[in-house]
Length: 423
Image (cartoon, rainbow, N blue to C red):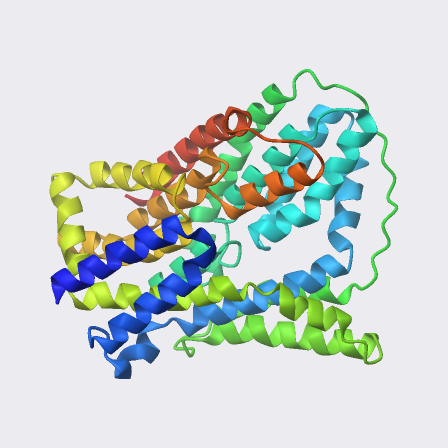
């Protein structure tokens, strides 16, 4: 059984890498084989799939779509631009703004919201928008790890480790991963300033975008407040956070219908904007991970890491962080994190130490590592696609000129912070 499960797992990963457009169906097919073979008993399917994570993702995606439709993101960007003196500071402000938005909104959605503003600025000033859009994309990837709802990997960690919204800020009386990410973001500011050091052209911007509906903004704020409130409820049902996110989206969809007097366009668009393929991918991966766990493969991998690190926690932490950076530069971080969370838990159990520092190291490396290459994160691919439509071809060298220093500075900062605070 162990050999069969291992071969199936390796084959699943190989096909997901070889057939990126078909990853959800590969994962679901593999999950079906694990179920049919009996490695994952059908009776345990409900425990294998983390429905709280799936509900949180679906609800957040829907609410974000309503938020984008309201034009509030463009209004916020214009207000920031009005306060910036020149192009260099515009690049810094837009990158930080993208990061702040991405802490609460999906990374790709953040790029789709903010990239048009960056394009408009570049066109107005007659400069190439390539560097600005890449900076926006990599900043979005970085800040996605800051909060429970900022990125799929954060939601996965929260679900697996039992972390609530507030745990990403403070946990067990210590500063949590939010501060590691924010320090990393601040450390990248000099990098952005250096990249745009020659662009001191003045910028004049007016606040022109009219917000069509303030209700989605209220829903996003309510989402945060309710998730914080839920953090204080002892013994709450497992899918509580998921019900909060989906419930608020349903309220937003109904409000959109009422406001539009029966016009279904807004609600329909929001439903279509939910990334159902990612939800299917995660559902399949949950079953696959349950399969290799039941077969004992996770324990084998954990023991291998322990031997590799020679029972040295710092060495293991270093391998997890920087190994995750390298792997996530080429492999989508969702299946990688899904696989490594139980591995990290097994490592901590073998070494008889708390897993928190290893969890944070995994998230830091896997989330920020996607900035190393243009194919390492969906937000990078989205930004490059937008530039291509505008007639700008982005080479790997163009991207890595920004991505490499950005990644090294941000990861190093988070790496040191998490170790110093949590080991």
